[in-house]
Image (cartoon, rainbow, N blue to C red):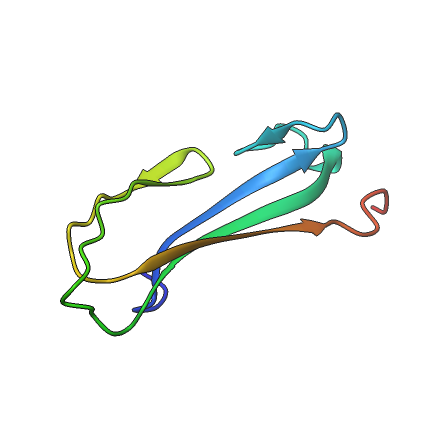
Amino acid sequence: MLDDAVDGLQFEYLLKDGSLVHQPARPQDVRGVRISLLVKDLRADRNYVDEKIYTLGNCQYGPYQDHYRRMPLSRLVEVKNHGLQ
C-alpha cells in the first residue's frame, strides 16, 4: 500500500450532471474528484478491537479484527479549467 498508515484509497469522479462515478466515460464531463482515504493509527491499542466495516466509494474494508483505530477521510476537489483543451 502507499504507507503503513493508509489502509484504503478510492477516487470517485463528479460529473457535470451531479452524479458520482468510478470510471468516467467522458473525461471532459468531470467537474470534481472525491478522494477518500482510510487511515489507521500507527500504534496498536490492546484495549480496542476494530470490528467496523468502512465504505470508501464502491469498496468495503474490514472488519480487520485487530488493535488499530481507523478513520475514513474524504475530500471533494474541484477541477479547474475543465473546458480547456
